[in-house]
Image (tube, rainbow, N blue to C red; front, top):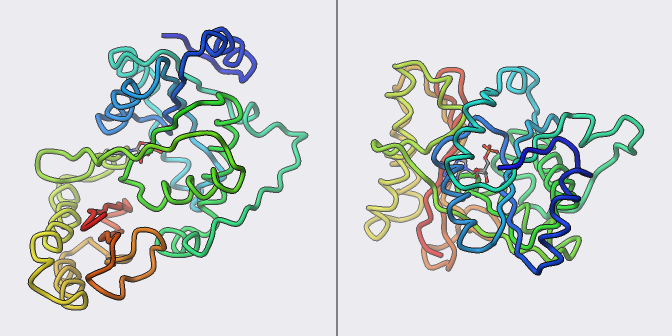
Length: 282
Ligand code: AMP
């Protein structure tokens, strides 16, 4: 497995593969890797000949400086996991490599109204930061395929809108959510959960599963209210939102007959903010 810290070294390495007509996949991550990330690498192997994983904790997508500061960075562990996964190359640039000091810092693109809903409402400017760094990574790698997790449902939508905005010839693949055995969606942030938080964290997957299991029995309003009631009276858990939304617009679903329906949740468990979702119908 090759390791690169500069865009020029990376593109030098990739040129010969591109000339041979090989397909390249990118798996963008912020590191602190777990089996969710590795599932993206594995799935990428079905779509491409060469897999590049990027590890970059992107400052422009953090709205809370403390969250950025405490983001875990276990690089030796990450490299060992990637090596074992069959990943071909790792791109792990320093901040200046992605955001040169002399660069025009302005970035703003129209991502549609969904940018401002759900996560966008709680983390202002988050998706501008996400799309900015992903565009930079796409420019550096020029991949044929890019893998993203359904875990960050809204992020996939924003990336697809960015790709459409620039008319990039890149296929965006959405990968299923990988969960712990008890249902908690894997996340780099789970490491911050105390033992009590870890128990409490199950409320996210349980409330989502309730909606999936009972979808045919109740109205949308009843389903949402019942799911929200899971969060009452749990000390140390604060619900940000629970919604059954249209998966294309992220607007609250108006009818149970809509084609693309997803239940999405965000909650603070202790001091850790967790998100999760389950697709009801695609
Ligand atoms: P992150 O390092 O958190 O930015 O995540 C990098 C990529 O891994 C994103 O596309 C995430 O959606 C994806 N990802 C994170 N957690 C999971 C999970 N539990 N299952 C599947 N994909 C995930």
